[in-house]
Image 1 (cartoon, rainbow, N blue to C red):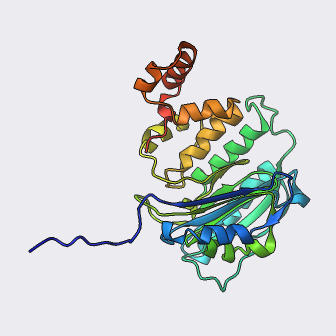
Image 2: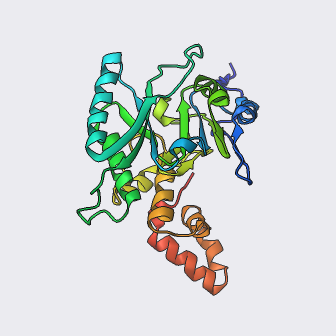
Image 3: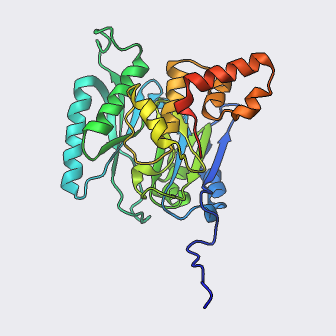
Length: 304
C-alpha cells in the first residue's frame, strides 16, 4: 500500500510574512494600510504570532522611554502579583511619569491574552553615580534584562522612545485589531510580521517584533545558530528569555550598532558574511576586513 503524506499546512514553512513602510517626510500615518498589507500575506503565517512596531506614536512623551510590559501569569492574581513586583522594581530605579493599561478591544478574541501595560519612564537622578555603567542606554538595557530574567511572569517587550511594539498570538491583522492600532496610533514608520513557528511554542512574548531600546527586528526564517549566538551575547550581559531565535538578532544589533558604534554596512558583514571561498577571491583590502570580522565576531554569524 503506498504511503500517504499528510499535509498539515498547504504552504511553505519558514515563510513568515513581513511588511514595512516609512514616510520619508516624517508624516505620521494610520496603521490601516499596514494592517491591510500584512493581511494580504495571511497564507504565509498560521495564526501563532503577529505583531507591529511603530515609530513616532508617543509625541507627548517623546523624551521618555516607553516600556511595554506583558504579565503572563496563569491567573489574574498571578498577573497582578507580577505587576506589583515590577512596579516596585521600577519605582526604585526610574521616575514614572505615566502608566496605563494598553488599550485593547476585548471583542477581538486572541488566545490567552496577558495583562499588557505601558510605563513612560526616565532613570532616577544619580543612576550613573557608580561610574560603572558607560551610558544611559546601557543602564536601561541592564534593567530590562533584570526584569525579564528576574521577575516571574513579567516581560519588557518594547522599550524605546516615541515608539512601541504591539504583538500577540494570532494573525497580525487580528493583533492590530486587538490593540486598535488603526484607531489609536499614527506613526512615520511601521513594520509588521506574521509568524509561522517552526520549532518553538507559540506564546505572546515569542511573537515578532523583538525590541531593545529603539531597535526592532522582524525576521523571516529560522536561526539555527541560536545556541552559539546566545552564548556570545550572554558574555555581554544580554539575557535571552523570550524563547524565540529572533531575539538574538535584536540583541546583536544593539551590541554592534549602539554599544560598539559599528556602521550598518559592517554589521551586515558580521551577521551574514560571505563564505570563506568567496572571501578568498576578494581584493586584499576587503579580504582582510572580512577575515578579521569573521575571526573577531564568528559567534555572531547568523546561520539558517
